[in-house]
Amino acid sequence: MTKTIPTADTVLSLAYQMADVASVETLKWFRTPTLTANNKLEVGFDPVTQADRAAEQAMRAVLAIQRPQDAIIGEEEQNQDGTSGLAWVLDPIDGTRGYVSGTPTWGTLIALNDGTAPIFGMIDQPYTGERFVGGLGYAFMERNGVQTPLVTRNTQILSAAIIFTTYPEVGSDTEADAFNKVASACKLVRYGMDCYAYALLAAGHIDLVIEAGLEAYDIQAPIALVRAAGGVATDWRGGDPMNGGRCICAATPELHKAALEILQQVPLD
Image (cartoon, rainbow, N blue to C red; front, side, top):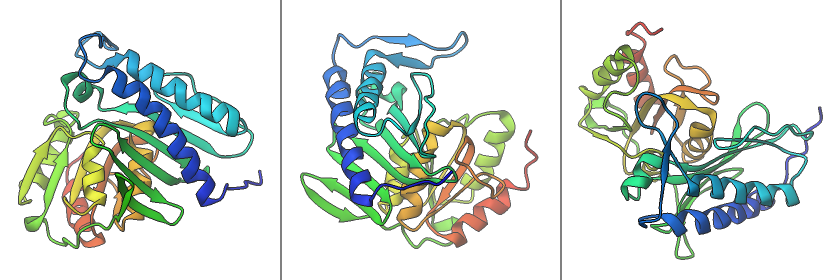
């Protein structure tokens, strides 16, 4: 299949339109007493809210008009096949647990995949007014109409690194053990930031994000963003992380190598 990639300006404009309509829905319910959360799990708590569903529907409506030929991979609705060889990967609220808790660490994720890799990614945090963009020649954060370049830090050794993950348990016991071995070598470890951690990495505030149990819609936008800012993104064995599972994002190749060497020493299922 011959793929025709839209121009960078076209992709950026479309991503902005989707983020704008999604933010109407997410901000409508955020920190309100009318927000309701249903649990997706029989054991544990994985919430979905009316804001998740409404925001994804709003983004899909934009694509239905402007890019009906493209596939869509989303969290809340069925995947949609396309004919262009391109796919939009959407997570209306990454970090719904944080969203229902009132923390501003959630975000709307928008990625464009060309069939081999995510080539564009956006993390939008409408409550703080921050929009992080990477790919197709872009690497910037926009707030109040002002764009700031995104560049990862130059940290090259673990003892100087700040590392993030979302859950202290990380995933399985072996995954937690692997993460903790890396974290114990770092300067500072923090938890609970969901997609916002990847935005902080791209913006040069932290150095490592290591996670497990991811879906494609959780990670494709962060992958594109981190790589555009100069960072490295792989799975825990150095392979391709775009379909989810385990991912490590690092500010520099040197830091990535150091962390990967520790992760690779732990047997994983």
